[in-house]
Length: 420
Ligand SMILES: Cc1cc2nc3c(=O)[nH]c(=O)nc-3n(C[C@H](O)[C@H](O)[C@H](O)COP(=O)(O)OP(=O)(O)OC[C@H]3O[C@@H](n4cnc5c(N)ncnc54)[C@H](O)[C@@H]3O)c2cc1C
Image 1 (cartoon, rainbow, N blue to C red):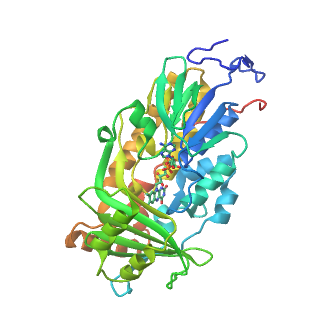
Image 2: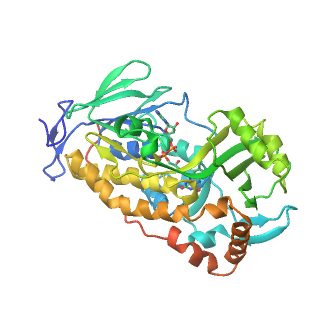
Image 3: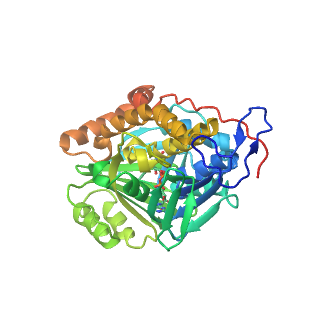
């Protein structure tokens, strides 16, 4: 029995016993990317009893990376998934963001909670830990293909024929690209990166080291000069996260030696602990480096293929909310798929619901570049003055309110009937 828009592939279609009159249809979905958006989507599609496969090109779930500030609608989704206790266990609540001068003296200080205006619905968590917690919530309930990716996608209107890099060929009813900023699914389906990627003239590097000599518990230490910002965060078990964001107009290097070389060339001789941070860089096991870019698209779907998270709507790390948005998108996409058997209608509603929000986040993020890597002395002065003001009562909330405090109404998720 084929529903409108769906091809019922497993002949398990049966009338629902929830009185809704809709049919329970077994849908085979391929999710490309096991970051944040992919596993979140898998969690919710499982509730619809869909048959989910995730393919991740990394040989294991990724480790290392950077710290995520997590609150707002992303927190709401996590709460609905029942994973907040695990996030609290692995996360941190930083009590101070401190801007310092080249000698390490405090020039500004504020409590991050004042910016976010959230009492206990806020935490910071390493991206890897967040991804792991989300993945743990579906472990065993989905098929995970590690160390592989999609090579070709052929959508014939009834299904998508997928050829994987390692040679296997399989059919799916839907393919969802959750493969991040440099999405292969986007490239295969919509066209080359140049059509959608807006490079914001900055790169970001983050790496974790053990036994870094300086520590400031639960304080985010931030130092900036013209062209860059350096951040140090102390983690548990004597680990330290070091992060640089810097202006860069040339080609973005793809390999670690060239990436480290760029950082050394641009930052050698800078103040504060920057020389020590650069020295520690070479012993970091995990090293993250990428361009700071946004992805803007007119539509996040075509035929039976759709995009979720950074793949279709990356707001850049300047927005500070990419994870939250990725989870909101994944949840909303699943909720819309739950409402209809017509994937085209669901994809359209998913886009209509979220496109204005994403646009406003991307617009706001573009204005925040000076805080992460001031272009000139005037911008540096503006950044330092703004950070000083953030320490004043109520100012932080008011100053950042427009970009941080919008209310996102999550659509209801229909209660599902019995599991497979
Ligand atoms: C330095 C930095 C700081 C940030 N800070 C914050 C913050 O404080 N708060 C916040 O909310 N957000 C923050 N973000 C943004 C956030 O990390 C992203 O928006 C979020 O991770 C997007 O999730 P995603 O699942 O769409 O993509 P990703 O997390 O990038 O996951 C994509 C997954 O797809 C996999 N993949 C890639 N290509 C392929 C392929 N071809 N085939 C198969 N798999 C593939 C990747 O290995 C990865 O596992 C920050 C980002 C950066 C860079």
